[in-house]
Structure formats: structure tokens, C-alpha cells
Image (cartoon, rainbow, N blue to C red; front, side, top):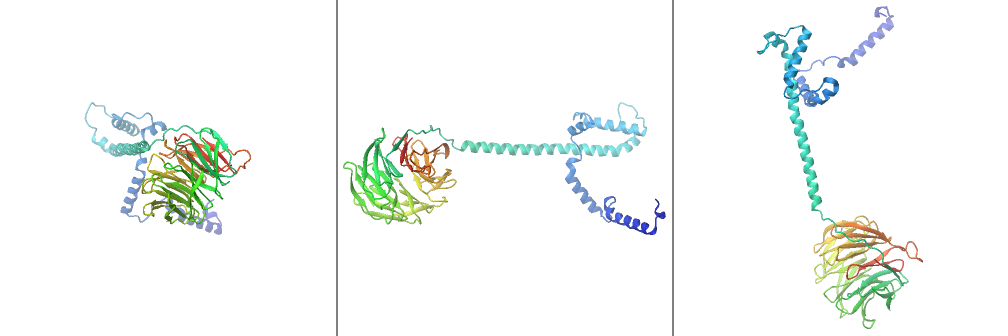
Length: 463
């Protein structure tokens, strides 16, 4: 219907609609008015910079889209130019003279100049883009190869764990009436002693596992045992705040050491000096003269129960781990703290010193809870994980680190690398609750081939 034949009202509405359409769609079909040449050049350069790589399709894509197989690079440009000339001459009806040499006529050169320049520019652009793409690919390949080489070098630098034979349960010994809290092996490897919550110290034959002797005298749980390498003495400590020295020739107490204000949780003998170190709930470690019963030092500074203590020949000669989540290294001669290690997040309940390295290990609860330290400065070397509350650590001369936890789980690590190689669980003995599967103490024998553990089910396990 013509616009003149419309009623006035509809004609006015149609005209208004057209005006609005022109206003809304004006910028989509016409050039933007008032744009300067400089702005146009700027836009053109941005377009070229953004889409320069997509202006010319690669030969492979052209072949896939039906343009035929791409010609070889040696005769590509000459073939494209001749094909373009033939196509233009056929469209315009121009007979192309055939001659062996020479250049085309002036009119032909003028007519063909725009197309040839465009084609030449496109081919030059493609030729320029190919080396850039190859250079980018080469750069990416070189970066990837260098990263892989670096990763292989780092992997080669990391020490590989040594092979350790798997550990198996050999014997279960029962006889205590309470939780087995401590264990110690005689230097000649003929017998071992255990202390438990029944306040009794029992001495067992190492070869047969038979009970040889029971020592009574403590009035509370026995928490620490140590056999002297230099004297025929067995030292014991308990929650009754007493430290006792037993003469193994007469099986009687010959000395007692008084001074702790609360229960004693750990005991250790110095390997070369006649010194005993004990630690307990009074947040201190005390150094005793073995012969005169004199208290030499009170190593204070912890803010919680000192749950573990170890001694060694060189400084730091005393190492303590506490429920305040710290480990302290002590100068025994001066009785002062050398270093405080605060890497643990929860209470440190276990310490162990290997017989073949000047290092030590500490264990607590939580993730990454077993740490290996370098002496004497206390530098962190390795983190290991046992997802439980670690109560005991032991290390043998072959580099096997054993950790026993409160839930009855056991882990065996390669001490040099921190790689676990075996995991096991405690088997609760008949007559005990399932909750009594925790491990409280452990030690290797003098050969390092047998492991003795004390558990909450009142039994001692031989591996």
C-alpha cells in the first residue's frame, strides 16, 4: 500500500517509525561522519595489528576448502601470477600474445598492476608470517625442552630411597596388667626391659621372650627406662616423681633422685658422661649426676609438659620436645638453650637420634608431623607425614625410621629421603578393647634387625 493512500494517523505513525529506524540503525550501514584521516589510519593500523595473522589462509586450509593442492614453494608465485593473468584476460576478452620473452605491453601492465600488487602484497605477507610462526614455535619448543631438562636434572639430584626389607610381626609377649609405656634394650642384646601402668618393671629374654625378672618399687606408672652402657645400672622414672637407679647385680635400688615437682614422662642417659636427664610435667628437664645424686642443671623455658628428651655426645647434648609444640636444643655445659624450633603445630611427643648421622627426628600430631633436623644449628631437612598422633620414634643403623601412633598405626620411612615404604596397624589382643590399639614406645635392638613396641593392650610386640 502506498504511503499517500494511508489515513493521516497511520501515515504519521509510519513516518515516525521510519525516523526512529534511521536514528537507531544509522551507524550500522554508513560511514561515521566527521572522522579524520588520522583516526582512520589509527583504526586501520589496529585492525592490521589484530587480524594480520588471519588475512591470508595457510595452504593446508585452502586445500581443505577446495582450492586444490597448494603448488610447491619454488614455483608458487610464478604460477599464481600466470593463472591470475589468464583469468582476467578471459573475463575481459583480451587475447594474450604468445611470445618467448619480453615484458607485457604498457596497457596490459597498467590493467594488471592493481591485482598484481594486491597478490604480491598478500604473498609477501604470508612469506613474512611463516618465519615468525616458525620462530614462535621454535621458541616455545626450546622453552619446553629447557623446562623438561631442568625437571630431569632436579629429579636426578634428589636422592633415591634405599631398599629396605618389609617388617613382619614375629612375636607377641603378654604379662603386664597396664599399658606398656617404655622399653629399653640391654647393651649386649641379651634381654630387654619394659615398664607399664601396673608400676612393675619386667625384664624379658631377647631370644625366647620369656620373663626373667620383675622389679617393684614405683608407686605409679613407669614412664622411662634406660640401661647404662658403662655401668651395670638400670634407671627408671615414673609419674610418682621418682628416679631410681637399679643395680642389676643385686636387683635392688641403690640410688634415688629427688627434685621433680610433678610426674616424670621421659628419661635419657648421656652416652659418655655419668649424667642422667629427666623431663616431666613441671615443664622442665633436670640434669643429675649419676654418682652423687646432685642436680646439676634445671633446663627451664618450656611452657608445657616436656614429653620427650634425648642426649648425644656433641652439642646440642640435650634435646627436649614439649607439649607447647616446641623443640629446644641445650648446651649441657652452660645449662642454657641454644635454639628453639617452632616448626611443629602441635605437641612434640617423640624424639629420636640416629646412630649413624649427626641429626635427629621429632614427631607430633597433624600433617607433615615428622621432621628431620640437622645438628647443631637445628636446620630443617625433611618433612614426613603420619596422619595420627605420633607417640614414639625409633631409628636403626640401616636408616629405617619407625613411627608409632596413638591409633595403632605404624609407618616405616627411609630416613635419608623421608619416603615411606611400609604401613601397618597394631592387632588388638583378645581381652582388650578396640580403642586400646595405641603404640606408646618402641626401640630397635642393638643389631637394628628387631623392633620392639609397647602398646595399650598391655602387650609387647616383636617385629
